[in-house]
Image (cartoon, rainbow, N blue to C red; front, side, top):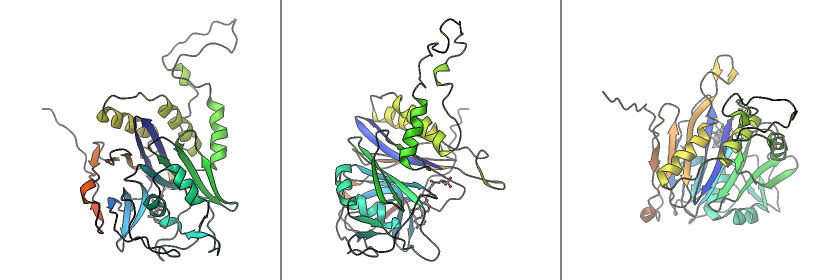
Amino acid sequence: MCTSVIYTVGDAYFGRNLDLEVSFGQQVVIMPRDFALHFRKLPTIAHHYAITGMALVQDNYPLYFDGANEKGLGMAGLNFDGPAHYFPEQTDKQNVTPFEFVPYVLGQCATVAEAKKLLKNVSLININFSDKLALSPLHWLIADKSGASIVVESTTAGLNVYDNPVGVLTNNPEFPQQLQNLANYQSVSPANPENTLAVNLSLPVYSRGLGSHFLPGGMDSESRFVKVAFTKENAPVGKTEDENVINYFHILHSVEQQKGLDEVAPNTFEYTIYSDGMDLTTGTFYYTTYTNNQINAVKMPKDHLDQDQLMTFDLQDKPTINYQN
Ligand SMILES: C[C@H](CCC(=O)NCCS(=O)(=O)O)[C@H]1CC[C@H]2[C@@H]3[C@H](O)C[C@@H]4C[C@H](O)CC[C@]4(C)[C@H]3C[C@H](O)[C@]12C
């Protein structure tokens, strides 16, 4: 499972938890403006917006899991196994394969409004990256620094683009059902509850936090959607970048998966391999990993973006314990 959020507090922070049982060897990858973007069925884009994100580089091609561009538009791909459907090539469409989709959008669009326009004529097609790397069934959260966000889901019905009033995405079911399910939890609150069950009964408020008693806490996609929406909507607004980055990671870590809790095959457990987020105004990319809770950061080198070579940064995965004696 995975979770992606946009947290808007002056600057906006966008990113995700990557939850899986195996790591792909991903790195932080900066794609500068002149890195030639080749497509299977579309003309090459020679000059585009620069992108920073988490990607697996294969044959000098960055397969982005998530990222954001220099204009403050972010995009993350999350598992959508079952409903996801990709199409054969269509003559009247911009045919994009899912592994090209993140750079296709982030390379050309500065805002969610621009992305919506671009998506009007896009079809996601079923062409694998290679024999070894088949397509993944994904859906995507796209968000910009104004806080606007959309969800893109390619199903047998076609390419569905939904406005996202919550600014979060997890996995199945389809996005409209996630919103419908969220409505079931509207009485959950950070405040102590009022007794509306039976006003003549004296019910003690025996614990702090009783307003969130019915907040789901499971690893499943619907539970994480509700929990992260609650955490994000009630997150404080910090006064500094440090405070907001810390708030942001607390939101993502509220739905992180610890090893041992989500068995996907006998004795194999999905866990949160990394959590990341970009400040969509400054372009600084932050991340933590399962073994290293220290927040690491890679700045967008704004004066060195007019070039054509990828910049890669290995994940800092070693535990950092600050021994005090
Ligand atoms: C598995 C990842 C999504 C995490 C997630 O949602 N997990 C939940 C699993 S489940 O619902 O509980 O089954 C997705 C996100 C981005 C994906 C990667 C990116 O799309 C980039 C390439 C695309 C290639 O076609 C396949 C390898 C790949 C490198 C993908 C592997 C994998 O499918 C990734 C890493």
